[in-house]
Image (cartoon, rainbow, N blue to C red; front, side, top):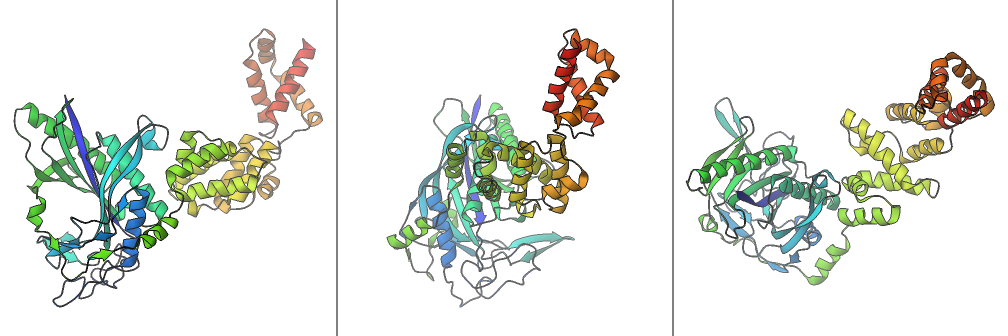
Length: 487
């Protein structure tokens, strides 16, 4: 039996207006090729880089959120390698003296942990968070290779974990938690499909119980959570077969072939000395004042796990519900706004149920995010209050919500227009109940014979006659009274 040992390298494009070392627009996705370029990011002779302060700030913010030590003295270095999408022939990165080091990130793993619910907490140690520039992008068209340098020089933050991850599920929990964190901080969109977040896996196997690491294999080209999970599962199986056959695992870089569902060898794995790192001669060492670092710390927003714990303590939510709500900061804000509007009138759990129930269901059906929803949090509260007050029943509330979803109109207006107001007047329902009893003698006889479930059928008939407008609790009360008097 073998145990996987996994470390992650996650690259995050930062949401800065300009590139890392020049003033070019940093928006690379969806723009015409080579329109956001200049002599600096094209690596022309005689050009000089200038450090983007906002990129440094965003990296320090991330390091603080990851419980890292921020290094006041750090240095940019040249990482030398030759590839068509690297115009200078080297990448400006950080090596020996990164901005942040020795942090940790808590994840939850288990049956529901990776889905936002309650799982077993685990700590993944963060070795370093450093800042570098992105490369260009190659496109292969009709047997030709073209290069787009719009992405070259975009600020790229690399987060390197220790080899603390033991399964594809844990890797998924780790990367999704990182994406959540950078979105809360506002430093990146974390959108893997647009290339704003990319990850590489370093994976080896060792016998269960062994402390010695096996031979590490790097897997690249993981541009979605699904690809990452599938690549890890495949590579674990591949390395196990190699070891069981008595053969050595070679230290190589593998690429993930999404179409075939396999990893393929690309090249032998480079070591640090292969890149011939040396301090970037065109950039001075970067010195951060302690007061500046503390100023950055003061700007940190409430982070996801702190918000989750507050939702549990302040609103009485389960840890599962709180995790689901804080997964997306905009959803958490929508929920909190609804709670503020409701005040003491509603239990926050009721609001959470509607947000994670009907609201999420329609968002998933329409493929939209919370900021695109037409239903204002104030109108959601008004709808729930109408249910709570007995003005409408649950089926009518769902019909009303569907119209609110399509139109953004307030619930009271829709209820009046569609005639969905609940019949909660005993005098108005008494005749309907009597008619239902008269029309269903078999169910009445069954109930009188002791079959309690027959009352549910009779309530259903009352709801049918009233087109769903009867108060079901009142209908049951009147049914029992009239059936009792018959008995």
